[in-house]
Length: 228
Ligand code: G3P
Ligand code: CA
Image 1: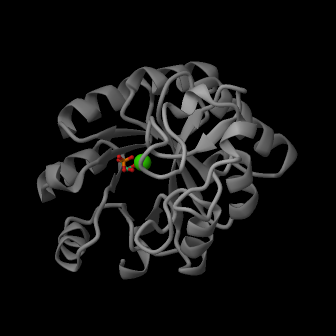
Image 2: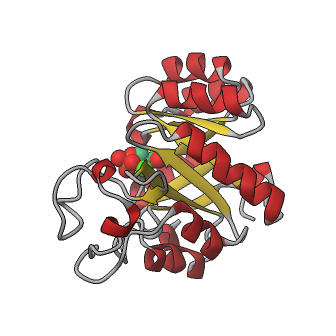
């Protein structure tokens, strides 16, 4: 494993429709150290892997993803050809080959995420350190922490590194996930001195990749992970 983790964003979004099994397989083919995905709870209670709150941009459906059942979502096409995967389908493809960063989107995702993680640990020989659960929604991270404080947490921010560090302490997070534009050599050092990993996103161009490497971040989340 490289020193700076190479993490595919929504699989390998730069090459294949985001958050699909095919995109995740592409990232695995690149030999990534980790894969980031987004999850929502659907109306029948499963976690599905999808970024937006609504289906409109990525599928031939419309409206909120959380209002449809899994069988209804499975009728839809992502980018005209792929299907929306469940979290469990993604876990089966990744099969511990790399770290899985699950970003909680939408509402009420914490409980089901913990259930799935615990199931794969108990039944499929995954370990807690195969996972990191991240979110901009701090109450969801608090909920995960209350349900199972062994699950590694990452605090996402596009606003402020210091606030993320302050919150990270309250849920015993292992990492902060700041947008790259917030980072300086100094705040990366400060976070690491406090024992947090720094996983930054979404870094695609060569110049910014090199800048993040010079700051010695712990991981880079990219649509084009083969460039890292
Ligand atoms: O986890 C990093 C990044 O994915 C957060 O932003 O909007 O791409 O989910 P977004
Ligand atoms: Ca995300």
